[in-house]
Length: 111
Image (cartoon, rainbow, N blue to C red; front, side):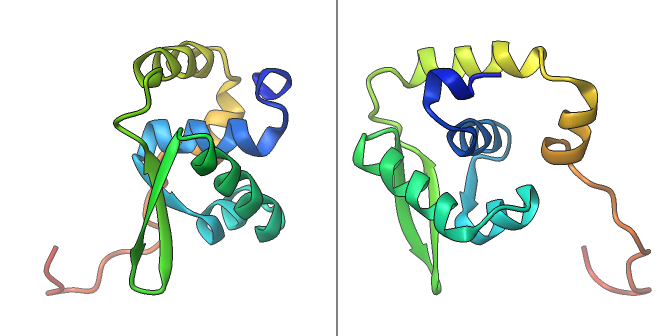
């Protein structure tokens, strides 16, 4: 939907994911969207250089989130929310909505 505006589909997917889940990392995105990790990493680095995202290390993983100091963050999030409303339900369910557990939790396991 917004891929023409942002330049590629990876950018759109990353921004929608961050809008809904607040944080993400490259391998998680690549697995979710079934694309190459390199393309996702390149797009994440591009967004970080532009100041839209910031990253930090969580163990051995580089985790990305929106940059709270980005001057157009509020407007960007509003645009993404509006665009998300118009995504087809199948795409929302497949990629962005939280998934339910496929098997029950082990008995006695703490939440």
